[in-house]
Image (cartoon, rainbow, N blue to C red; front, side, top):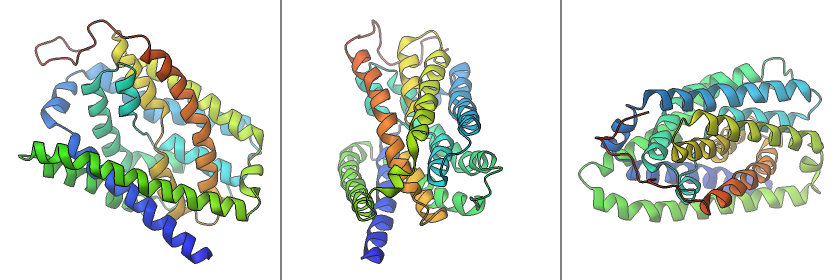
Length: 297
């Protein structure tokens, strides 16, 4: 039974990441991304919030709560190291859609290098955790960056087909991750909830604080445009749970990190969604996507 669950988890997690990145690649329009890259200050602040401020907040939290169990430490480090994306939340919040698209491309590309580097730094001093950075790079290249590139390559000259395929792939990805989560819940029940109970309340307080820092730093770093502020706030707060689960399953097997990741996601998503629901009720005047002729930030 254990071998069967492990196999299902591996297949469904891998399928989720590949399908998600293929779908995202098929939605990315290079001309739109190119225009957004001209907004240099916004791009720099996005990288600062996602790759420096959130990991720094995690580093501080891990030292303030220095007796957290190993599975919680791994979960916090992986989530803090893995920038994610929130295109649907951004759209519902009347966010900056071209900027949102660019963030997906940018963070997916740079995270192949930044995730192992950041995780190595944050794991320093954790005797119970050994990290193989090259193995993580290989995992991210194979399951994240290459499918993203293939999706973008397919879109070139086939925009209508790509727009049609992307939602179907996205649906398959959601089914795949749903099956994966179900298998982890089965594992949790079989273990009488021990991996979750062992995390302790401090783990959840620590991650709630990190998420609050992410939301605030993204909003402040978004510049004068309210739509960009909302987009960067949500994209910074929603970390890449799928990639974190994949890395945990391959680099830290049998350490309970996957349950820790899912538990912290239950903290992260409601915090971001609370802002999304508030912003959804507050439309922004002139919130249309920035055109090429408009001044950049």
